Image 1 (tube, each protein chain N blue to C red):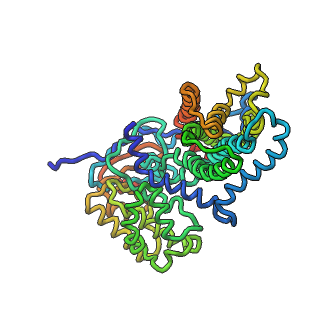
Image 2 (image 1 turned 90 degrees about the vertical axis):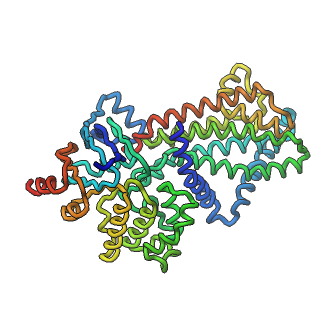
Image 3 (image 1 turned 180 degrees about the vertical axis):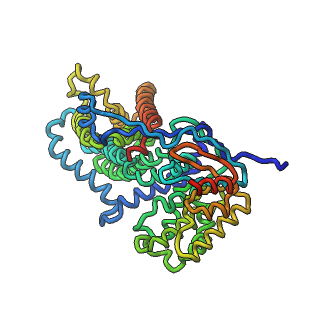
Length: 245
Length: 258
């Protein structure tokens, strides 16, 4: 048997949101309500004891209806949210394609935004210097790269964001339905890029509502329902059950 | 600890970029540019000197430099902590979308203020030359009080940015606190006019000790006493520690309030 290495381990992760019955953003309001004992909290579990592990090179799908906790799970894994309980162990660097173009500034040019967004993603300046041409080329925005970003169409922004986020060779790639970026031509191109990353041994976490996409690329699938794991199994088995529902 | 350090190294270029952006924005859209940073303290100095030098003439030597040094310290503190206060809220969109070490935002704001403060050392040197205070090689030691000030401001900035996430109206409260701090800092009056029984309260103000060291280094060219420096640095580190601890404990909750 082939020797496998676990690159991502999610261990009994629970995520609880404590929702106050009304939003309080001032000291005055807070004190008055506190004295009157009018602050009520409602606990809401977005994730309950979710555990799974992903091996190196695996393409791992996550499915579930809206509000099942998929996005929360991805945010926990990428470190944006800290789980209420449990822990996430990661090996290697993660490239989250959850929110493309985070921190884009409309007043700066495309090229300046490459630097800004790249730095936010944790790239070094030197690394961006070396790859800026490649990013521009992949996004096919050579003509507009000195134009302020506010004049870009949403498709152009998404292309630029995708190009920046995928310029690294990450160990773990998190994809949240961004394959539906831009026009057909660019969609094919971005799919091809992700495919080539998978071939190179990148581990992929893939979230989608499209069962055909899931069936096409995933090895295993996790089915989330109301924050709980319903099933983790081979793609075919889970997807057929999911469709039955 | 080492993983935290590694994380900082990873994001150090972002940190530098945030500081650069702040400074760029500050001087863009202003015709006078950097010159404004020098003119502003000079004008204040002239006004305060004209008004107060008669009142305190017997007590204070080199009144213009006295005012300028006091103002420089206070101005940096109030500007930087005010900026840092809003930094988490202003970057809320970003913090909700990607993982970035959150302390970068308040600390970078304070560091950019610190750099622009160095620019106002130029008019200070100018006034020193004109009014005949004279320079000593020990003037280079201004770095000691300034670094203490930086540490205090980072501590206060982290604390304020944390509280502001949860309570937006703290801003109004802090503007009152700042006014109190301003009057409790001997910017334009001599320390000797403070009644002895209240002096302990004034010394509680972190800027008090710093202004004192800063002046003795700049005006008299004195090497500050070791124990004065020690007390001031311990106090600074204490404030820094409190701010850092609060920020660190609450930072995972920010995202629910942004």
